[in-house]
Length: 112
Image (cartoon, rainbow, N blue to C red; front, top):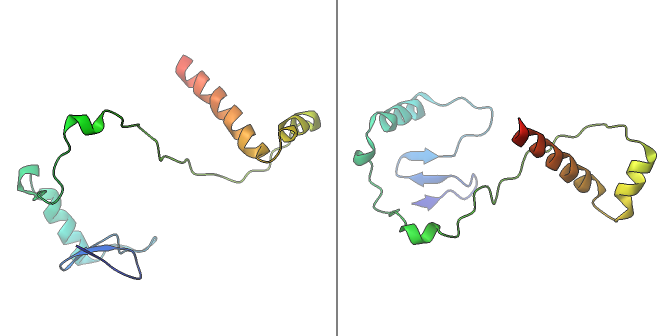
């Protein structure tokens, strides 16, 4: 495999994976290639260049380690003393507010 310099796409022969830009529809050729791959059974796909890892390789695996939720800018009106309390600890008061809200959200979801 080789990496395309400008797009960062990985190419294998004639097939280009990840080369399409957001908002662009798949070409007829790309649709045919995806359909052909989807029609294959797992045992027909050559994975010899990516062998399975032994179970011991997964013992320290952490689910969601690199997961970062998408952030959304919002305008939120808070009481002045709440903002002062969040800012008292220094930089990162918005991150602290997000963490507090996330912990509360997860607690409520666990109880539901």
